[in-house]
Amino acid sequence: MDYRTHGTCSSAIHFDIDENKCVHNVRFDGGCNGNLKGIGRLVEGMPAQKVIDTLEGTTCGFKRTSCPDQLAKALKQALA
Image (spheres, rainbow, N blue to C red):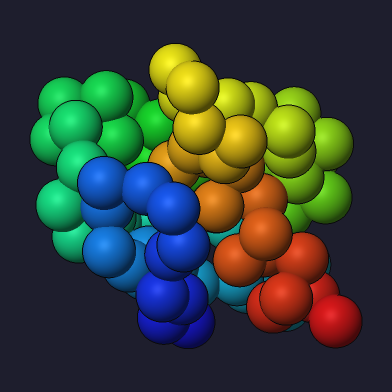
């Protein structure tokens, strides 16, 4: 899936969800390269709902959202 982010330094998130609704191959376009690679590795193989529950609502500085929050929104959309 490809998701265009809103309100973050990254511009898009790409990921796969398998038949068991687990997350794989998370990649961000732009943003804080090392941190976002780390997030991708941390959530690899996790159930999408657990990632949503963990990351949803995370903010970045003064922004109301963040790259992790945008990943949660992307996963919610993918599961809908």
